[in-house]
Image (cartoon, rainbow, N blue to C red; front, top):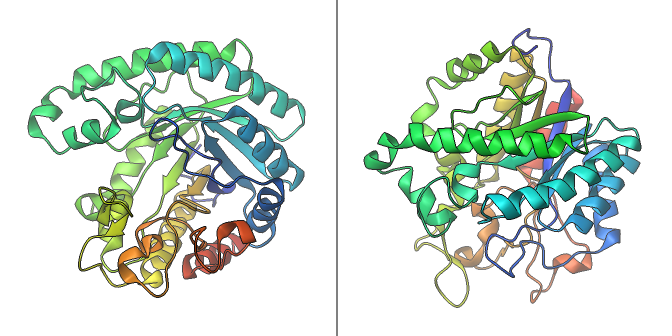
Length: 345
């Protein structure tokens, strides 16, 4: 159980295989087996991880990344994501992912199936709103908070269906990545999974809030935590990317862009890993390894999207001098901080 102060069992990171946040547009335009192999090698050997959460939309990519991770000795947490899906297509997608999880589990790595992530905003039908951005906007609306008991009942009804769907094929460990604002019924799950970001409003009561989840009597894992690499990002946590303006022909940071500061991200991650180890949590998964859709531009601060992202490595735009497809991914200060923290545990 968590809260015994014996360190982290699982030292993990999130790895996106490509998620369709908008239809037909994936967060990983470039997908090559050689890149995946080298990235999983880096996660295992250089970051000193022993687990990876492989998430995304395409099941073939999930399978390839998961098997590659297993080949490098990493425990796989498999998380299919089908953004904006209603309950029926979501459950159909999950059913196929559960078959994959069972196949992976037979390979012998103790695979964990994560049935979803922050589904109040990423799944249609629980909260009102045409898309996840509209639903996210409701989180800051006091009128929206009044309706959260209803939203949580809808969420837990769908999660009960999700667990039952997964169990038709998969007998291993089940979890879910709950958001800060969700009240999850953890009864059908084996691990309490939390996207438990620290930001300005919860900083003073962060540990107290974490400890409330020990009451479930199940292992607790932080399935996402992280921030951007710019001044002020630690106070924003999961909203660090909010400084990106996607409305123009080319995405750009708000003007003026905040100064790049990789030490902010590094200190944030190292401090929280220390907290989780002191609390004796079952595991923690940094968000995240790489984000090709947020390229680094060392010459143009307004187009240095990397400073707004959560990746531990920098990648160049495909039309730039050092494209991701060329294999260039220099590490950031946060990479070194996580590697040191995990190596010491």
